[in-house]
Length: 252
Image 1: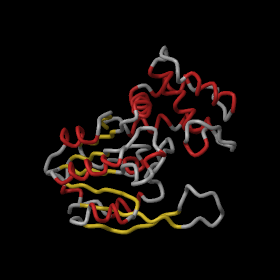
Image 2: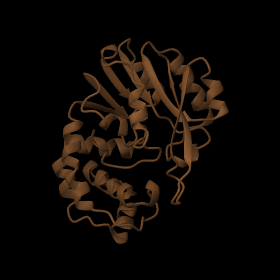
Image 3: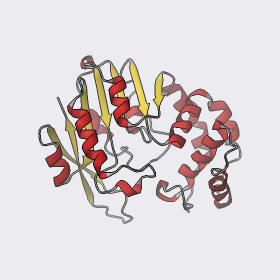
Image 4: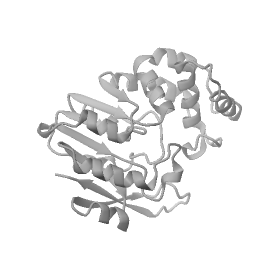
């Protein structure tokens, strides 16, 4: 089980073991699709989920970073050479992201710095803490090898589901949680929760969906199997963190 090379809002590091427990037997699917990829914690949790693997996200900068890690790891590492945990470098990278003249590798490097050095992955404020950036940059090569056969997409979830749906498909979905949409840079509107449910109602394959545990989501997916799980509430800064309730929803 390897770790992701980045953190991301709503990342599933602390919940991935419980998610994997709910996966069907590997003989039942031959393609694995992460619809809301984010940091890809579930993707990276196994050496390989299926013969075909798809990572997708609507955030273009995030997808560009994944593609550069996959296809150009050495060039990305070279661009990140001499990167430090530095307030000056962080805000320089933030300003440079606004430039239209960056290459894909230059943009990926600066986005990587924003992710690694911002507070709570907000991409806006510098996180005042120690971090070994040299180790983080070296790890890119291992991630590149893991992504070697992974298809990386940048599509709306409805389009992606229609494209890859088969009887032997397993979709894992981790959408922005209900009433937390404002935390994400790519807007996920209230109607999108309904649109997602309607898309899943029509699929031929299997799906496993993670959401926050609330009455609205439980009612929306009342016709499916719902499993309650909990994890540490990482968004609260205190020593004894409370538990955060979530649900896993599946059609099998």
